[in-house]
Amino acid sequence: MSDAHVIVVGGGIAGIACADELAQAGLKVTLIEKEQEIGGWAADYCCKATDQCNRCFVCVSDKEREGVRATSGITLVTGAQVSGIEKNDSDYAVKISRAAGAEEFHGDAVILATGFTPFDARKKGEYGYGRYADVLTGLDLERMLRERGNAFKPSNGMPPKSVAFIQCVGSRDDSIGHLYCSKACCAYALRMARVIRHQNPESEIFFFYMDIQPAGRLFDETLKACEEDPNFHFIRAIPSKIYQYTGKPGLMMRVLNTETGDLEEQFFDMVVLSIGMEPREENAVVWESAGLRPSDEGFLDPGSAEEGIFLAGAVSGPKDIERSIMDARQTVLRTLQYLEDKS
Ligand SMILES: Cc1cc2nc3c(=O)[nH]c(=O)nc-3n(C[C@H](O)[C@H](O)[C@H](O)COP(=O)(O)OP(=O)(O)OC[C@H]3O[C@@H](n4cnc5c(N)ncnc54)[C@H](O)[C@@H]3O)c2cc1C
Ligand code: SF4
Ligand code: SF4
Image (tube, helix red, strand yellow):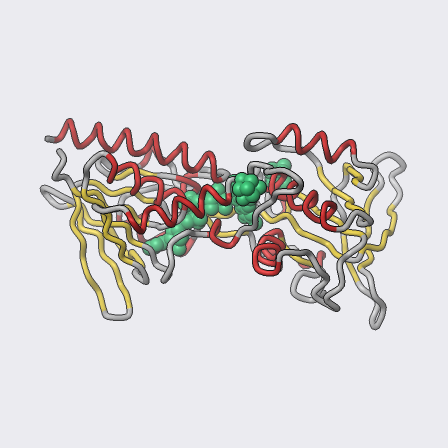
């Protein structure tokens, strides 16, 4: 079995973790990534430490990414989009297209770790994303904190004093047909809100939510610290609209007060939309070629995978980094078992 060759499709944290585990087990691995760099979405995320580490797992992902480059036994193929998978008599043919043209790789098993797409906040037009400079998504804030180190209002570069987070944008929402929870957005939003409070002790956070979904280690401690912070306000409501008066600073938010039934209006300096995860529709052709079917939520149903094809990470449903790594490890165990039975 040690001369077996496994093809891992997708160089996000799940694919990276699979490649690493397989190489450690002595197998030959080809890791195929469509972008020029491996790392997936997590490569854009920030450290969410305040005066202590808040266990967001982003640096774990960064370290795994660096580690996999240096591991012998792993062939990295980047800038290569997988366009189809075909089962032959003795192996699997993975078709790729890249600038240099089409190519085929052959492996004894295939792991699909092609991940998710962040929800496009423009689909919730009522929040003005793309129209108002100071309405950001959680992904924008991740990138801002990673690249610049501090939160600022894109409209004028100043630190925001009042920041509203709107949870469940693109998840748990009947109007867009996504009833599932994206699992990672409560945790990333609370952790980044704490970073803003830590950087600017005068700032105030207004956290609009319906439910809080725990994720990851130290989550309870993070939530408790937010609840005990007098400048952190939890409001159980989903705002209905954001608008801005021409030439005036600040974003006006309309919110239904669930206790009084009244529509209220509040001003904020900056709004962060905590976007969730969607399936990567552009891979539908790949899934079909491998005989895979979507689950009710639209992600891939692991039960539909043919013998020798395995799934890892968020491709089968929303997961945070820690859960994606755990899922990758279980996938590798199943892959090794399959190769053992085959040999
Ligand atoms: C805004 C936001 C912030 C988040 N912050 C955190 C956080 O702080 N902590 C945390 O634990 N989790 C966080 N998460 C969750 C985290 O993003 C996921 O857990 C993680 O990215 C899942 O990794 P993955 O490898 O399954 O998928 P991805 O990161 O999507 O990686 C999939 C890879 O596959 C590649 N690919 C796709 N299709 C093909 C193809 N056809 N051919 C070749 N390559 C392909 C992609 O280019 C990509 O590199 C956050 C999520 C969001 C939306
Ligand atoms: S786990 Fe997150 S908060 Fe902790 S040091 Fe790493 S990146 Fe920073
Ligand atoms: S993790 Fe939180 S914000 Fe994200 S969908 Fe679930 S409940 Fe909503």
